[in-house]
Image 1 (cartoon, rainbow, N blue to C red):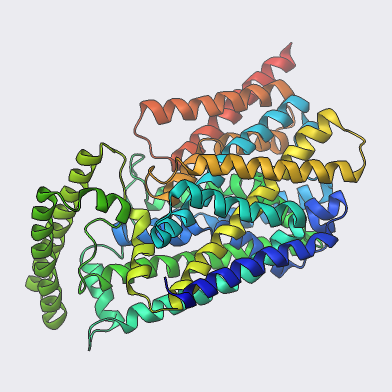
Image 2: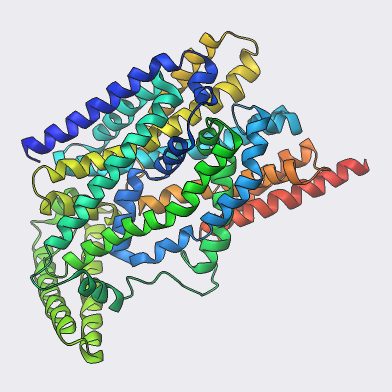
Length: 551
């Protein structure tokens, strides 16, 4: 990075921290710190909801996912609009009128303290783990840019965001989210423009889409009903529906967003923003990954996008042999791509498809070689595709802008989730068991220390996250271990009058256990864990409740 890039990044980070701390004066009470005095407008809440989802994982992981696997990941979001409509009708007015700080506070009113505490604990565990993945994503970028150790960059990013979240509370979180959304989309728009402007002369975006479509990169519907397939129409509309119902309706990081709205109607509108804008937004981000794929049809892509791992094998003679083979495969693919675009015949299309297969096979051989040499069987460089592309191909100033956008995405999600973790820890445990009638000052002090604790915890988790595969998948896997079971408890609470405290308590334990068994001893993909956990929790919980009634 050049001086101009550093100026952009440092100026942005300094402004965000200053702006967050500046809002401390609006968070002098417990309700102000945790719920912004329920005074935020719907558009700010809506943008904060979207910013919480639009983490650096989305920018780094999703673009890399599109480069590697195409647009199929878009199917993951097909159930989102329906989930939002259901929640607007049911959960939003329910929680808002209950005047609760956390979603789990209601469970004690409906069942008992142990059910509230266990459900909140599962939220804290799942969200704490997921937050570690969120912090890991921008650390990937900075470690490449600076050549820093990833552990160091993780703690720099995680703790810098923790600082302004500790002092500013949800006011700082929401208003910085709003500003960061504009930075993110401006940066992405500039990035897309520059990618397209660097295509070969007389080569259009339409031509690029023809190339991507020829090798299946534009497929957005897979109609197979296969529980072992990651992204299909059915997993996206049915299994993911359970994940979204739980995430937006039972996860404190999202519930807390609409609880800050001025009214029930404004809370509903804030969620409907995501219902109608999330899929187009995700499509746009995936499209950038597709355009990076097209760009590399005419420029030789790195054989290994993780430059640190590449350096470990770069001088080996066997690796140099692989590189020669890789260059030949790329040249053949480039020639086939040009021929296909010029002729648009079935024959040239098949030639291009075959050349792409051969190129992919050589790259897989190289990845296998790296795994063998480094002894890292989990090696996966999909998360490094977009940052490596930005560093090597964007002009000065734009690199800083895009990195600032990645930081903006990371900090918006980190701050929102830290605030939610702090709220649940303070209200569901500290106030419930240790300081029921303490002054607001006590809750504020404890909440700030809780924020610091979760910031450090997430940083530790982040050090192990970057090697687990595509970060966008990893974060949803962590959530899927718990989300279905948490949703099941709320279904028992709201939908079954005869459900009892013991039924709900043992139901969620059984639900989480069933997901663990399925993940360990079956090949079911993670989205279906949400369906399984919810179903087992509801069925077991209701049966135990019926038995309790009979006694």
